[in-house]
Image (cartoon, rainbow, N blue to C red; front, side):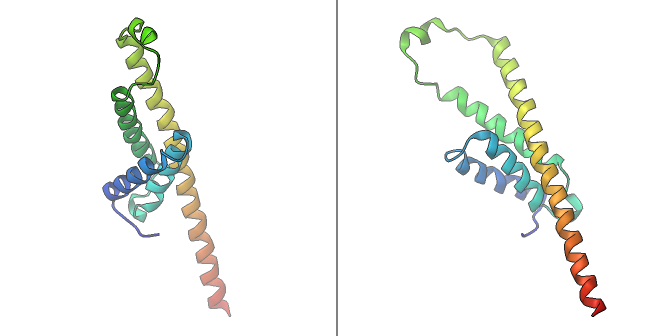
Amino acid sequence: MAEYSEGSAIFISLIIGFILSFLFDNIFVIVLIGFLATYMVSVEEKNYLIGVIVALIFETLNFAVGMVLTPNIPTYIYEQIGLDPFNLILGFIVSLLISGFLGFIGGFLAQKAYKQIKNIEQRRQSSKRKY
């Protein structure tokens, strides 16, 4: 896979995440974009924190879109529900914590997978030199 800078990898994985969010559940998408963003960066910048950053950005944008697009509920229920700022902020913080953890899982898996792939390639090259 091509190696990109941090910003490019985050932007590309966010675009892929928004496309995949129409097809799959957001939990899977957050782990996947954390994996992709971490795996796409160059070797010097490869760190699991890139997966956490892209997951937090994705969740912030997803939360903002969820605030604009209201759910389809009956009007008599919707009229009785008021804006509760405490629960809004608490829900935002909890969703950021969960998505940050999922992005960490994706970034950590990408970091470990990259190290395993490099070790296998080094073993193959060293075995070719012996023969």
